[in-house]
Image (cartoon, rainbow, N blue to C red; front, side, top):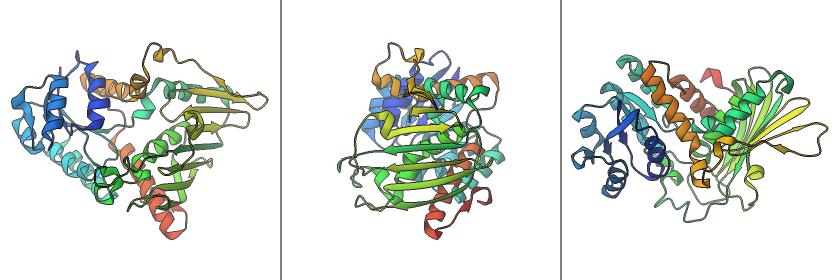
Length: 350
């Protein structure tokens, strides 16, 4: 049995992490939690039946109490590096929410701490673990699909002023590591890259705060060149006013010369079409039968955690390694530099 602690008991923990981990009670037990909010501690404590004496206001006290095999970090972005390094020094496996850090300098400090302590580290690239995404990836790998030459992804949101209020929403503050590229587009980057089947080498693009009155980017338009020469694009925004079917406003799509695969951004729906087809054909995803929309929205987290804890049990490498997480952060850093310099950035140089 893996004994797990959790740092951060806010919305993502309550809505996605803990409901997903509840299904793995035969493999993992949440024994300790930490959060600065007493309300969050009470909510997750009751949800996961954590004893009152194992609910901590300071995560350092939780780490100092011992008895943990792994710790899940689910706090605002600017806290990830400090907390991951502390977990490494405590000798526990680190299961972190994205992104691994605010900057590549912070990321390198995490890498150094993890290697020095010889602990395992993984970041939740949960969209890859949805059954629909897995189905699309399997189809893309089939020989008859052809060589992947072009891809695109977009995530367009019409967020309300309440959802974006920097006084109450940390994702809308630069000091907390907010912004659409590091928060929402983070998922599109690793999903598109995996679907394209080749690492992103060069990035160009523009980041803007044009639509909303924030000190973080609310719009990103990026162009990627992959190691194999294929190209792909990404567009994301929090401030668009268009709304419509999820598979048209929020998607990832890959093309060969003769075929294309499309998923909605969380892999909840999968479509394919050929050059001569009249339209898209939707695949059935048996894994979603009988699930509510809320349950389907978190199956990526459930699949990710299942693989993490199975790997820990069996002594296998964890999914989404520290190198994977740093690479995704380097693409984001490259996009920021590309926007500033109006030039292509070589991600491998970062």
